[in-house]
Length: 611
Image (cartoon, rainbow, N blue to C red; front, side, top):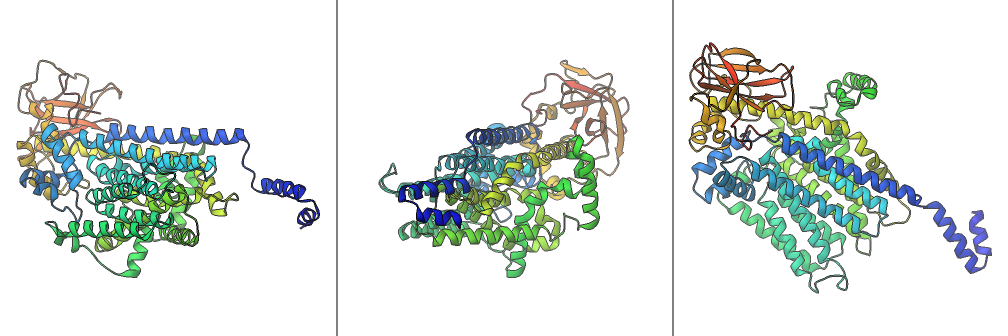
């Protein structure tokens, strides 16, 4: 009050200088050196998560079939083209991913590399578009723009999403809609720029691009139709004219009609279950999952081992106490629902503020609103289309294959907060920036844990792949997310057509003498277990092979030889084994004189051999 009285009594120039000094003191940005350090911090953190994420994809994504692929690849081979591309699968219209997988099947025998390459490029394109929009928005402070760019990279390459990132088909199902979302919102922002700043006098070409991207997202994965909602949210934030709204709604209506009316539409419509209160609760729990996954090392004693050595003891004690006093995080309603409810209310509040504002929302915030509304719409879709499934399997609400979509929701909210154009930052903006500043450190354990998870899953998949090639799998054995009936039904067809693991050089060696280029591993130790109840054929043998030293130079795969030097089995490196080793199967039963050999002439790009 004293300062205000002084300003009133001073001459106008002096009063203006005093007011400017007071405003600068109350909202003073960090010194230039700190701004540079913050920007470098976010740049280094973004590079770390990008590199480690891509490295995990390239190294641990399996090249053998897994989960729904055993059903999908049978459809690719059994149904005529284009029916095999257009048909609905599990309620989703996977036209574009199907086309990519079918092309890979025809051209490269389904070795998964085309899907992985398209997935990685799509993720990189998404991150680049989001970061570009954030960094170019001059209405927000530079350190907040850097935080927003990092948040975009983190949400995309965080290995809390390892289940989706490190599987070729799942990677396509998420990366393609993400890319089309980024393209659609980038085009929408261009369409709503002032005419004097736009490269095109008409916004229609950009809006048409946005709608085409939304349609492609819809036919890449079911949640992709939420891109239309993201466009509408961005149009609302940017105060777009009614004509653009009508054009977007027309595109949405046309796409939905095509989505439902194409063959197989009954399977799409029949999965909906409406129970409003339960739908909302399910959606809130679903949206809250990333935070629980992020801090799993504080909630589960086993996960505390991911924390670096000096902190591990204290974190383990915290996690042990949490396990005693808090409910099991894999099935509990809280704290997931609390996080999700907060996010829902925050998005509604931010959207209302944007709607009541007379001027158009700045690009970074408009981008965030679009992304967040896509995440909320995805939550609505999953809570309606999967409610019966979640009732039967409650822990699946938090399955890590869903995590990319809630991550986008929270990314959107972060961009809304960080893109605040006001000189004086709100508490929400300050809290978001502080959390984003600490996030690169807080998420290191889960980034490391995601890589370990990917290795373990890869070991399981490669073990099953060896069994499918050799023809030995114990009846009743767990195949992970692969359905046993789909696995058994697909083996003969996929083997005849030399698909994925059935196209590798190792598969062609089975039943033939050891090649001259191969080398018997004399110092290998073999452990065998008879499988009398073989689900595929006659009795066989499960085999574990260990070498004297575990080294990165060890081959990723070994052949198994009988006493006559014929190849009777395959073992693959398996991260689940401690001490390290190889797991697989042999056709012989019993296996006298069984030995391991390295095929030095193996195809380095083989479906299983590549590591």
